[in-house]
Length: 136
Image (cartoon, rainbow, N blue to C red; front, side, top):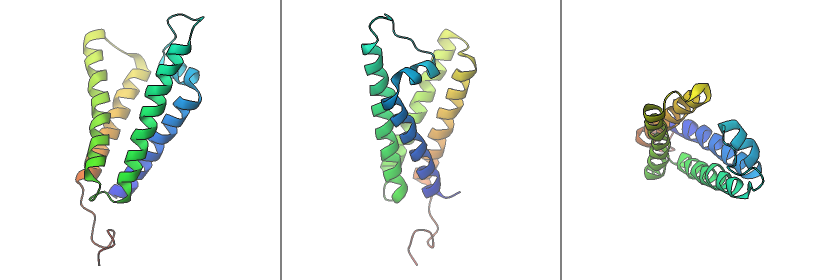
């Protein structure tokens, strides 16, 4: 596996997730199983969905793509992105231990977050072969 490719693919997927959250907060909330507390006033819920699932994930993906350009040189950006994904996973795992079984979508989310986090931490620590790094 090449850290550039791994980080690039994960960054692109994260940006797409973020842009989907910005463009369609209702669809995003439906996907993750959220609903506005007061159905007649969904503005706050939509703002929160756009902020977290839209803005945060778009910037997280952009940082990951930036790190993919030069993984050894942008090690801190990739490590930060990986640790944020692992933080999402840890928060979900704590929720499972306190609240119980989150259902299939919740378990898929936990595995997704763990995989993204682990792969990005790996990409931040991996060494590129000299030929791939442009150093000959």
